[in-house]
Image (tube, rainbow, N blue to C red; front, side, top):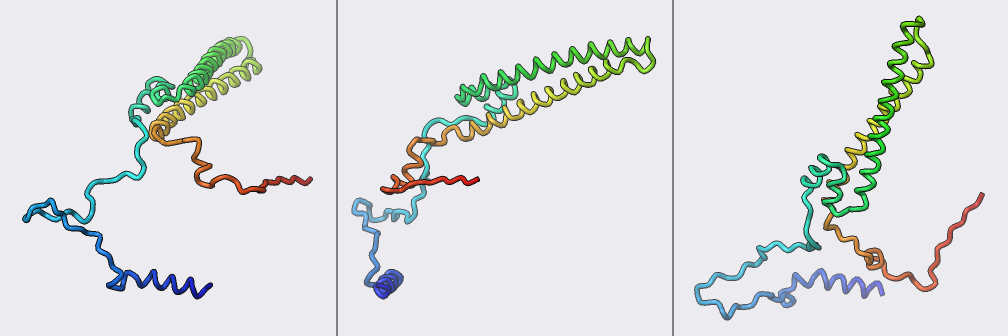
Length: 189
């Protein structure tokens, strides 16, 4: 059997070298006139092996819309389910930021008043003031992170807008499972 594989391999490698084995793929154009230029050997048109499934989305437009109004880039990219998530989280972070800022200002004013009556001020008011300042700053950071992720998501979603995510992609590559194939998971403690 090995000998047959070697002989077949040698024949495949030697075939292009043998003049009798060479076949011309060019034919004479019978419709061309006597002074016509010969057809090009290589096609000059670009053939896309992955044809576009549909219209594409502009990444810069998606990012600009998301920067102006968070969630608008996702709406532009037709990812409608992301809009309420972004708007809801953004609204929550803004409400918490404003609430904690109001409490920080209230406790800051109360602490300033306590400095007039007590040397060193009321430490409990100082603790509350610092707590609400930290909370306010934390929600401010959360909002900025959400804002940046919102713009990044709009960019990625616009870039992958025409990406084919068909339901048969996994099955086409591997085919159906073999008869009698099984998967076993064992967990030992």
